[in-house]
Length: 79
Figure 1 (spheres, one colour):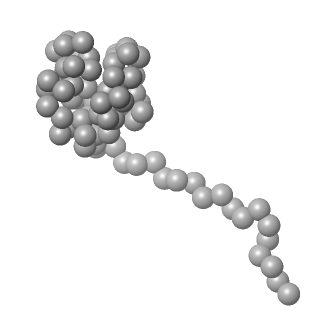
Figure 2 (tube, helix red, strand yellow):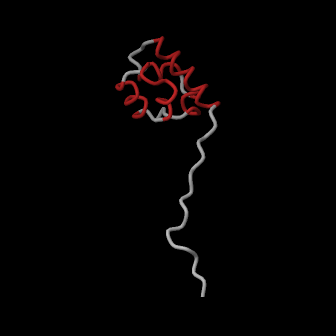
Figure 3 (cartoon, rainbow, N blue to C red):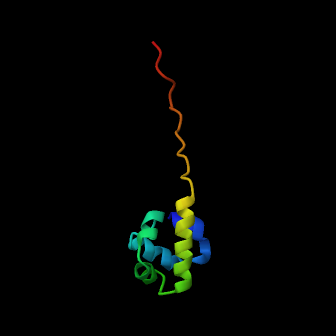
């Protein structure tokens, strides 16, 4: 979950599991979610709501990691 890279251990595992079950994982979905939707996932804790909102903003500002392309296993065939 990308949110965990930003929020880290500030959120307990149960919160991450509930956010994932509610499909609130990415920056866009978290930013679009209502406060009651997020609060339902974080035991109605307003401090953790603010933490999730801040993390979603930071996550949205992060550049995606480049995907490494593996080189071919065999050299190109040359007749």
